[in-house]
Length: 387
Length: 166
Image 1 (cartoon, rainbow over the protein chains, first blue to last red):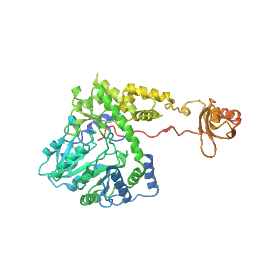
Image 2 (image 1 turned 90 degrees about the vertical axis):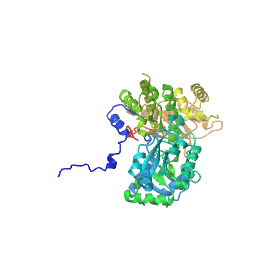
Image 3 (image 1 turned 60 degrees about the vertical axis):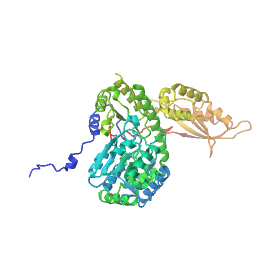
Image 4 (image 1 turned 180 degrees about the horizontal axis):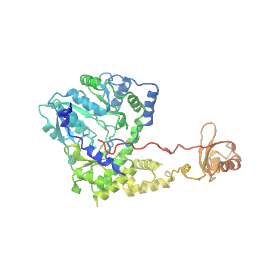
């Protein structure tokens, strides 16, 4: 019998494909492209971490680990989070090692959402937040942020988005794509609203290590917020370990137990060699992180000033490795700008519009590239903008 | 010499890539270009910034004759002639590319460059070992350079990242 119907679930059919895909397809076939569109470090994982993974394979550590991850790694994560961000978790009951921070977001959403529950998502943001909320049966209520406010979530805007159905706030600082960093005072103002409305915060702090001017404040470290936070972090960005797919989530025992239920059925555990690499990264890799951070900071300074000089207004973002310059002076939409720039000058950037509300009129440029590449990219963008 | 944070940054950046211009540096460290220029001048004058050079892989150049030897030199310091004076007598030779005073089994580590092994051997026997303070020399010829000054010569690492990713 021939197939006459689609077997794809309606909920999946209704999902929009990521706007990034289009630019990937456009850029992939081109020669000589300089890409500022990459959402991952240009550094390779430190040799000591890679070497630890090789050693684990040589020793035959190829079996599953505990569902929540190697206890030794969880203990190391707990001590890392305690020393770096001043929050204390219990390694046996409050930590799960995940397949990247992405899986942790998925776990968090599925663990807390009943059908119809609302999650406030702050945009512009990582492209997967809204789909993940929706796949978990929730409803994403998006709140835009604006350049005039350094792309920081405004307490008033948050209040307006909250309804009787709101269960959670999904927050990412430092932010992808804007690089915006919420400082302690910003976070305190948000925490007060969270408390008032009895919400839980899913804090995606994957860029926490990459804060350049003031240290990162973890949402969970605020007074009374530890019990209301699902803290998500990982090794991809700070430790340059994207391809290993290794992240972690920390939360109070009840929430962790709920997430672990899903994790044990859907994932079993994160990759074992990757866990050994991460363990080594935490034990000996902090100086590598500091070195990379120094480099990123200089490149950020370089690219922000360069963009402003060539006429693209660009804020100095506090963290991550993205700048989010305004392209409004060119008269193009962000989509047109990105497409024309790619075709005419072979520089790939990502239009702000794919990141949701507040993103139109801006493009995301990653400075996770060598200074040489950045210099050439700036020359080409200058030629494109001022032709 | 005491240096400030910005000067520290300039040194760290130039040590990795000396081709960056004062204009680039000024953007990278958030400092006025003229100020950067004067900081560089000061660092050069004080010989903190000693020299700008390129790292060349001569082994790639056809027919180029280039050998490097590292020589362990034992020295007897004499009254009035300390290690520094002996080192100076050695580093004045143009064949010598580096001289370090070492702890351990020998005293001076001397790097000598020449066109052929014979040329280097002659230098060692006729110029170096005959110095009055030199007690003994052990010459090691380099067979292959893998990494120098933090740079890997044949780096197989390439950028494998996708052109655009979230």
